Each structure stands twice: as C-alpha cells, then as structure tokens.
Image (cartoon, rainbow, N blue to C red; front, side):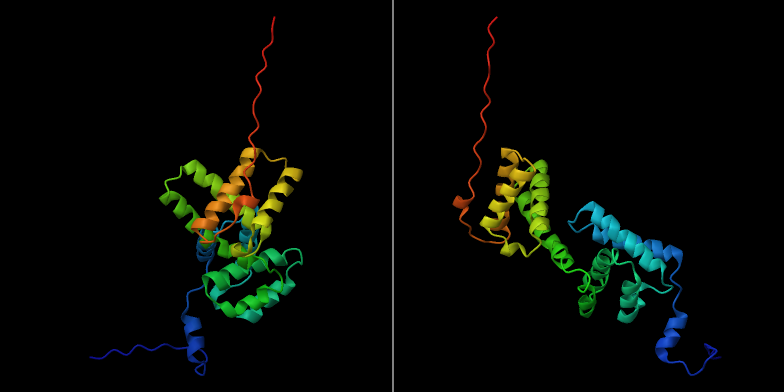
Length: 232
C-alpha cells in the first residue's frame, strides 16, 4: 500500500523559494538570544576595546529584534534601509556590527560597499585579530611568561588601534612619534616606553618578517635611584 504525502498551501501558484520560506521555522525569541550569544562570542575574538564591543552588541540586538526573519535571510535593500532610518550617531557603530556579521561571518563580500558609507576603519580592526593571534602564539613558542604575553599583547593592540592602518605600513618613525606623544600627554614611564619598543620589535621580526633599523628607536635610559643617608 502506497501512502502519498501532500503539502497544501493557500496559494498553489507560489514558487519553490516561497514554499521553503513557509516551511521555515520562525525566528523565535529563543533563537534570537542564541544568535546574539554566538555573535558576541565571535566578536570577542577581535581585539577592540570592550566599550566598542558592547555598543556593537547592543545595536545588533536592536537590529535582530526589528525583524521577524533570520538576519541571514534579509536582502541588502532591507539592511540599508534600516541603516538609513537609524539615528545618525548610531549609524557608524551599527555599520561596524553589520560589516562584521555579513562580510566577516556570512561571507557576503559584496555588502561591504554599503557599510563603508558609514564607517571605513572597522575592516582594519577586524583583520588585526589574525596578526595578534599569531603574535601570541609566537610568544608562547618562545616561552615568554603569561604576564609578559599579556603586556605585549595589550601594547600591540594599543599601537594598532592608534594608527588604524595595515601593520606593515607602521614605521619606526611612527612608533617614535607615538612614544613622544605618550610621554607628552600621558607621562609614561621609561619601563613602559621600553615595553612598546620590545613588543613592536618582536612583532616586526617574528610576525611581519620585516627588518627594521631599530637604532632610530633606542631604549630609554633607566633612572637611577639615589639613596639618601640622614645623620642624626
């Protein structure tokens, strides 16, 4: 005995894609929360400031909750219209989050033109992750302590965020000017200055495989402690 299973729709003329859409389970609140958890997990792999990450996550939450469908099913017109309607001061951070979602995670490379209308520097910051992961791995292989790895990592992140360009384009003169800026405005110590030089030197030699004349970037002279003896 043969059993025939039929699916009935109100409109028999709907196409194949529309039928799939009707059979798709709804993007429920539970699935939205799961989506945000996964997005946050992937975003945390990037080496950008925590306050920026939190702002991006907040904007993506609002974006996801504004639609009934999974964000992956939205077309570029819907996404761009949402961006246009968002407050102007919110647009750059939202565009950064959408770039990360659609271009970096989903691989929709053709969408980047829309997002770059609102923000241009997020691409560099996302690509920093690969450099810094390699940097950390190389430090571990060289048997640096966990404390040193943490210090060097944070130092390199600060350098990359400050210049906001491809790491290969950062020169010794750039680092020299960066140190002078920090000394004038942040009153950094000699040990922190040496830390900047050491982290950048390691990054150039072991990650970028780039030979640099570090004679232009000397280590600071250590301040000597003077002990005073008071006679009674």
